[in-house]
Length: 224
Image (cartoon, rainbow, N blue to C red):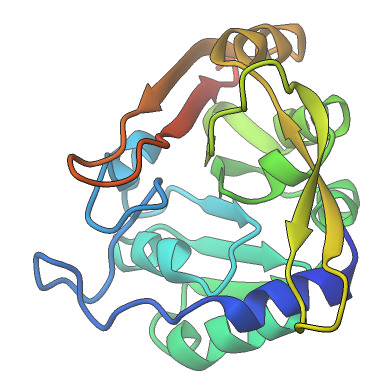
C-alpha cells in the first residue's frame, strides 16, 4: 500500500468511533461513510468459527464487531498509529481478535492462511492496484469464501489510477496517495477476470438530507 507516513497522517485526522451507535450497540459494522446507514456484517455471513480478514482495518471498529459474533478475526493496516489505536480500544476485548501492522500485499504474499471472508471498507481494495490485489486476495480466500469492499463511487470520466490527497499542516503540501476508481460494471469485469463468481455491485445512495455522494459496494465469491 502507500507509504506509512501518509497513512499515519490520515490516522491522526480521523475521529474515534462513537461509544455506541444509534441502536445503543457498542460494536457494529458500517460499509458507508455515513453513520447508522446501509447494510451491516450480514454481507460477510459471520458465524462462530468463520474467519475474517480486514485489509486496511484503521482503528478496528468493523473487525472488532465480527469478533464479537464469534468470527476469529484479523485486522491489518500499514499505519502504526491506526494499529496502536485499534489495540488500545479493542485488543483486550476478544481472544479471537488480532491486529497486525503490515503492508497488505506483503502480508498476503507471506501467509499460507486462508480466510472465509476478506473485506475492505474504504481501504486496501481502493488504494492498491486491483491487478495485484484481486489475485492475492483470491488465493487467500477459502473455497466458497466472500470478498467484499466499499469506497466512494468514481467521478464520471475519471477511471483507473487517480491521485488522492491527505492534508497536512497549513504550510505543508498534502501527501499524495493513489487510488483506483472504476464503475460498478468495470469492477464486475475485473473480478470475473480474476476468477471470482457471484459478483454483485451497487451504489448505496446517501441518506436523505445528506450530501449526495453514495457508496459503491462490491461483493464476490471464490468457487467452492
